[in-house]
Length: 303
Image (cartoon, rainbow, N blue to C red; front, side, top):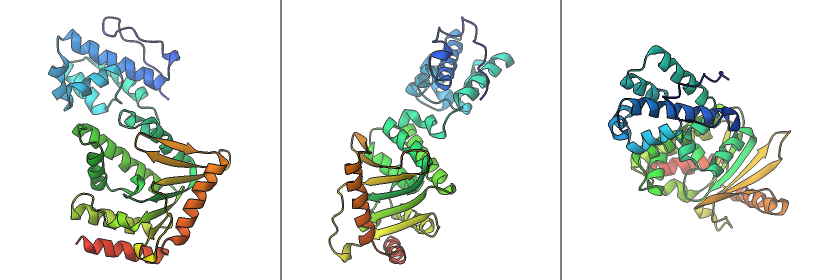
């Protein structure tokens, strides 16, 4: 972890809390933002004047200066050049930027990620096995970027474009990191309607279904489809994610997301209910080979 830089001169930065009173990364982000604001105000520029420099809106530059938005190196360096900072001032910003980015990868998306989802992402990294059921859409951890973008726009129709882009980037990084790691192993139980429900264009669906095929061909991922023609299955009306952990932590928990938040199920009786529901779905689901055939059939329908 890099050492914190010396504070900037008082005329450049407004007073801040001592770094020891909050996490160092957050403190560095605040100091960096206040430094950028000081440089801007010294030059008599408004937020509207400098927003185009970072290819963003007034709200984006405002969040950066308040330390509420994770700083991007390109944005900070573009502002430094625009303000005409000397070598020493630029080095100070670089050191603050380095410290502000010394965090878990997903924390850089904290401005577009609710706390309950950040906790799930953290837990996924510690899990040995994940079993999840989805009845409406492809799970976020298996979504392709274009599929994810369509989903996010549908759920957040009034969100600015830059926010949608960041949410999609988060989902993409989450998927890649989970797929590249040796653990956790993934068992994905999908209602067949997920394969047939169009999300975006036919091309988007072909890409998404093709990715499911390639992911399902790996030893790490077991995709099982609940075939509509196999009869009624008492499936939950909501998605469930069950995580099993390695030694040294909690044994297991279930994650159930709803419209305004999520529940983390840890009480033994409730956890049993969710585990049993997933076990019943696994028994009812098509075999791995038949599931692959169902995905291929759905893919052909979008050609």
